[in-house]
Amino acid sequence: MRQRLTILLTFAVIIGVLILVSTFSYTQKGKEQDYEVSPNRSTYHSGPTGVRALYDFLNESGYKVTRWKETPQKLLTDSGKSIKTFVITGDIKVRFTDAETEALLNWIKAGGRLVIIDRNPQQDRGAKPGSWNIRVENFATPTVETDPADPQQMTNDVVAFKPVQPTLLTRNVDSVMPSRFASRLFISPVTALDAVTVDATHPDKAPPEPTTEVAPAPVVHMFDDKGALLIDFTYEAGRVIVLTDPYIISNGGIKLNDNLQLAINIVGAGDGGLIAFDEYHQGKGRTQNTFAGYFAGTPVLLLAAQIGFVVVLILWGRGSRFGRPLPLAQVDRRSSLEFVASMAELQQRARAFDLAIENIYTRTRRVLARHAGVDYNSSRSEIASRIASRGTIDGRRLETLMRECEGVINGEPCSWRQSIDLVRRLREVERDLGLRMRSREERQAAENI
Image: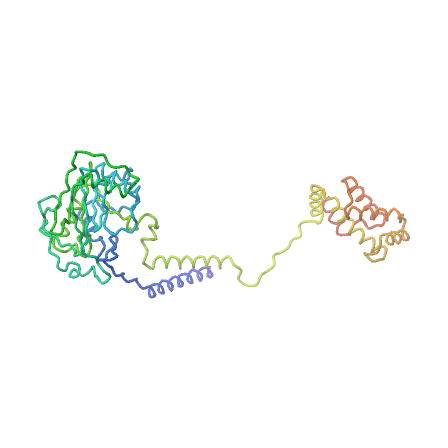
């Protein structure tokens, strides 16, 4: 009992020391500086380029929001039926594949609502005559020296935008303040010549069929003399909203003017359904262990590893020897005849008659040599003659028996009947000379009877 108590106390002391060492040696990683030239538009990111402030505000205000970590193909399955608005913020880390783009378009056609907030939104190169061409133009590009946390740098010489007309997207919005890096959109109808020019860059696509139908024009909600900042348009049963400056909804710019109200109108102007922010293309797909990711950046995982190491060390110590090795008590509970019987059975199954003769003849020859008073390596004729001179054994018969046994040992063919006959003759020689068994073997044989 005292030994167990000592072990428990030692374990508790070691754990306490490890916790103290980990606590004092742990240094929290400082926040990495954000750069507008390579922003992080994830809803998990709390830096000036992130979108966490908008996501948390929507969540706490009663909007149904979620972080989408699956591919766009999942929007067409049962898990995507509840998604009504899909938000893609610019500067994605994982590019859209053709299959993902096609799945997203099919989801919009079925009535989905796509919100694209990017300075370089992708254009539809498959436009048909009668539709509208949306061209993007950039006027300024951020550099490494641009600090996204400094509103003065981001909005230098920028005039606030005012709504062009009262719409659902500009409701309760007096003005918004984009960054000086906001791009502009230019809208023009697609003519048959434009469609042919576009198809010339994609010769594998068939030219679009001419049509007299004209699709509804995109609605411009905000623009200046350089172009449109915010538009939306229908896409069959769905709708697409395009905002050309992510700074408006970012953590660093959402507090300026009515940027927050505009972000709420854009993202939450649906029918009250679930709003999904695309995190899959921000590099947050379901590839990391959720439990490990929750404790990432904390000393919890280190403490757990240290505790596990101590537990393994204690278990190993309890299972190892403490002190000098002590031999186990050996109880001779088997007779040598059991081994002999086992070896005989194995040799019989393997038909190793030569090995059986060798085992018996070797011992018999040694006994005969000792009885004849000669060396073990003496010739069989000398051994046989000495034995014959000291007893009633025929020397020639004994020499013949020894020659036959040595022949079998050296590889001459031998059947089981011949091997039994040789063993029987060897036992007769031992019996005639009084060399049949030692006293111990006789005693063990008597005990087994």
